Length: 170
Image (cartoon, rainbow, N blue to C red; front, top):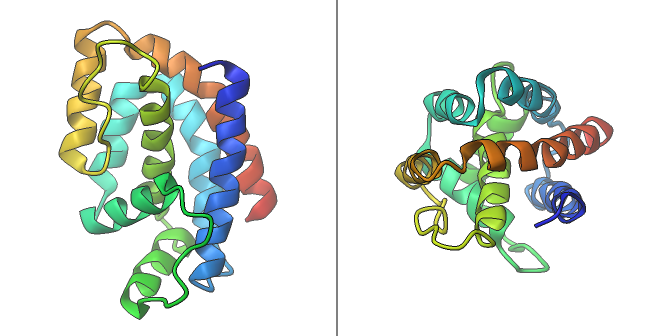
């Protein structure tokens, strides 16, 4: 997957994020732009492994992560017409609160890792990023196979594009 492919994926993720928030009638998402602004620098300073470990430690609701990841990775063109009010409340708190946004941005990041890893022969643990333990297994596999730095370097342009688009949108 080339840099331009990852940048295109970033645009698709930003559009999908906007569609998700609109389908839940959520207008404010300042936490997303804050986290998107921090994440590339964090990865460059601490590395992908430690950055993901940090974001995993911030998850308060694994089901919310699973829901967001599922929505981002879904190939559906339109989202559900009926909105679960409890899901809406959780998502609204996630994207607009101070100290929030980690769960959503982790899903944005792990979705890119999943897409990128599909093109790496022999990887098996990165093909399901839909849960916390799955993400941890993928990170371990990338580290053990000496691929972590390659993936990290490939993702920086993706994350910078996400950052710019989230700043524009939110």
